[in-house]
Length: 193
Image 1 (cartoon, rainbow, N blue to C red):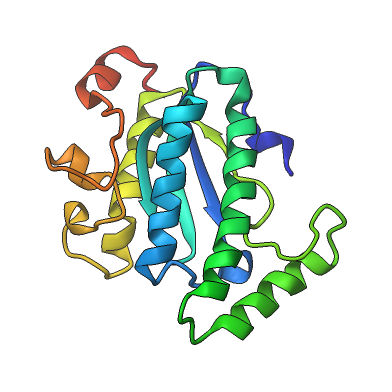
Image 2 (tube, rainbow, N blue to C red):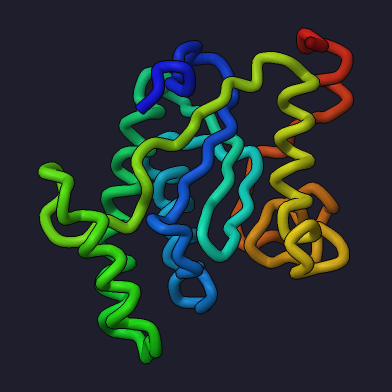
């Protein structure tokens, strides 16, 4: 993993992305998507993960996050990926999944040459953490996260996408609670560049 994208300043909010190996479009079924939402909620309630924004696309997850205990943010991310890796494989085996053999083959193939992985590797290594130390970076990442489904042609308006925090920011109830960023505060009080 590149040292450029590691969590360095514990007080920062980080933009992170988790991507499925080989960009497999896994999150096309509600069961898989709900697993990710439930796992994020667990991390919020039990591990101190602070989620400011999220968007779950078909093959990747974007988050704006920090931790109540900043030094452990990388540990929370590691545990989240490890847990969801195992649970996704279980669900693929249990669900009426027409692509089961192909998906499991991709996960097995990606685990084959990694001594740290026993059977299946679901997530690509790393999480490409980018510190949002400046208001311009934070607001750009928030906009990017929420407009991802619009740019992909899935919805016309960001708040219409169920698996995103855009609804929360539009004053509606989302799939999970997030800590809303006060955009006006960041523009006025955080380093602009």
